[in-house]
Length: 452
Image 1: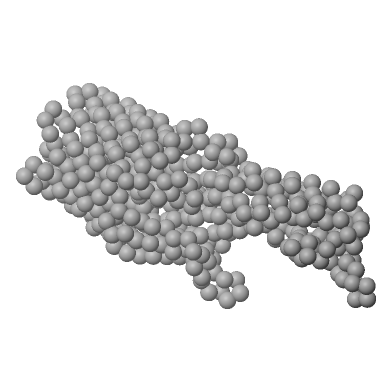
Image 2 (image 1 turned 90 degrees about the horizontal axis):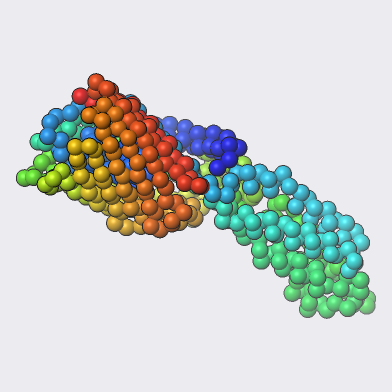
């Protein structure tokens, strides 16, 4: 990812949406947690006992601790950016180009003196614009930011963690819809005989009515004054579509041990702000637009449940179901004429997700593996995800940790990432950092807190 892309997209878009959508606070999705320990270990956490992050992964792990531990995290923060095609640079380059202007100019010159000789300039301009728009088609960009605060106490008989946490996700996509019109436009100009208008039939010209106009002499019935239709940037049918989803959660994770099996539950209040923005690529400004004109707000309650069990030789297994009450969020945009909000037709569904995990604690550290039991829906045209996560942590007597991991996306191998991180834990204070990434994706996270 180029420095320019990070500057032009990350600062104005991610921060704008993060601040504007998350005025109340933040949220978290288990598969994309910004806990640096988890990020560094490939995204694992379902079977890893950590009272500070239990609400994000599995509330049952609160009761895996043999001794009571109190924890405060202030805060956990992170960001992920996926930009395989340097999307903002591409759109900016298109807006700075002369493809539309060249077509407008060639059409004006041609309609002033239409002829077979001058039609080639129009056809060339149409084809150049079409090729440029097609090259942008399907270009994705996705960015996530997250922050969270937790306060909790773990214990085998009873554990609890109060949290407020969240993410703002922005997914931007260029949807190419001009191929049929522009290809038909170029073919129409090539089919018409502009040197001898009378050689054209009314049936032919009528079939090309989207691209040319003509007159008929009232006396002779002769076809005259054949003109190409005008074209401007407003006629572009492709679009820059941006969806932003801000999800705020406040919840309380509770856990207890039931005959050797830890059980946990997290009731929570959820507030969602859904931004659904779409604009012509000539006028689109993903860095600065009125969020309030494209924003819908939703509030509801939801619940997570989890189980965990310690086996022999330091092994632990876990299962979690998150957001068990399915919710649908419908996009709305303000009509500039009526000032009323109207449905966009786009709907984001928050469906239940289920993960299993296994971990082994050893004298030298920890290994862990998590698996998503189902594929989750992609965001704004991007492929879905189903993660198989694995990670390792080397521990230096509780004072320092080195971590590494790999998160394989079984639905889209291009979104698989390597990760690494470090932690320092002197005298109950801990600081953790993590980085995850691939050629097209970058994630970073940090955490500061107390555990004693």
